[in-house]
Length: 140
Length: 411
Image 1 (cartoon, each protein chain N blue to C red):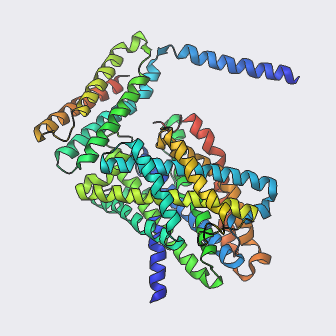
Image 2 (cartoon, chains in turn blue, green):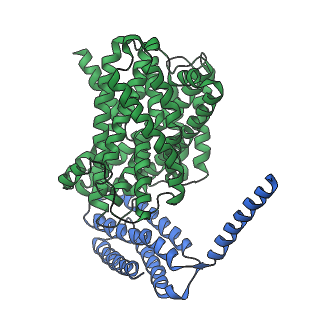
Image 3 (tube, chains in turn red, yellow):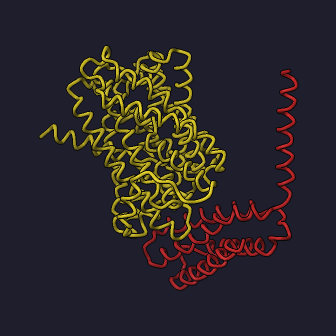
């Protein structure tokens, strides 16, 4: 009795694991829409952050290190998007990845020597990325 | 005059130590996701911590018995051991999270690498606990933690919707789908637990015994527990509001510690940013010290070993080894480069699991006329005490399933 219960439990656990493995092969629409709030949040925060820097209110070390933390978060998101997307979400997926790369490059350009006009430019870029990613999120 | 000064200092010290990393992260995220809707949970948690702190302080003053002595006595050795293990596991995880937070804040302040800042943090913590007396530890970090009041000022400056904030004081459910409701419940349990982090109570009660409280201190205990926790609750509410005003409209989910400090800086600028970073540093350092000392207190009180921060280490060798050991284990955990925010989540959700087991023995003793005489709980306190125990049990039962179903509170 005990053995058959254990066998059932093991079977169900294996079934669940294999289900996860099958689901893990491809990035589905659901996977992408689960990730998008975090991605849009990062774009929005970059926009807010660059605006804060542009206002001259930030501190040098904070600016550099917070930008580095945001870059780490973007790279974490990129890792989550490494799986092959299902054909139905190909466009949205490509746009997300491209925008994340642009966001990462924008944040990496923030340095101690960034001029006011450069920061304003980065802010405009972050604003445009945020807008595009929000559209992708709304379209899913 | 001296008494008034002592009371003010006691309130300021407790207020400065009220907010730790768990509260900061969970409450700001809750504001960013649900606006003002979860303010009532802060209020509920604040009432709970007042009850718990006041009872622990009163029992310490009357009986001179600390929390884990009562746990062993009321729950028996075997179940008491389970509570001891659980409570100290949460303490170590919390201590690691606070040390990780110190590393992050030092990095933001100095620009030096996180990996180098962690050893700096642990050496600093070991040195201050070794050299400073209990009273000075409490005062130094408590008073420096008052810099966190910058959140309160930034909240007022950010121009919140006060009417919506007042409505948020009443329990409410979000009008949305099942997933959203689960997330709402997860944050409700998280805030409730973060406000009630049990190490604060172990530390408070042990401190009362270290300072030789007698029944004369009962009114002072009640006053300090009520006023400081109420002001701490207000500060916590201001963090929820800041999340609601600054992050919700922009769709930002603040899961970086640096983002939570940005919230205090946005309305005021450079100086507020510096004050905020220093305030968080003081608050998380103080919390790391409290968790390490609490672990040592808990073990010594449970096994009846000699303990006391006021005594030289050679007189209380087990106590000294325990707090040093806690710091070192926490340091090893955080040196694995596990994200401190993940540790925060684990500590807050697991803390709620063990809360009923540490709360119940204190409630039973505080209710017991034989033990407490005329200082036992009256009808009102008993009623509130039991209602609160039911709430704690519900939160304890819901915490882990909600953590799993919401994938760790991901929006």
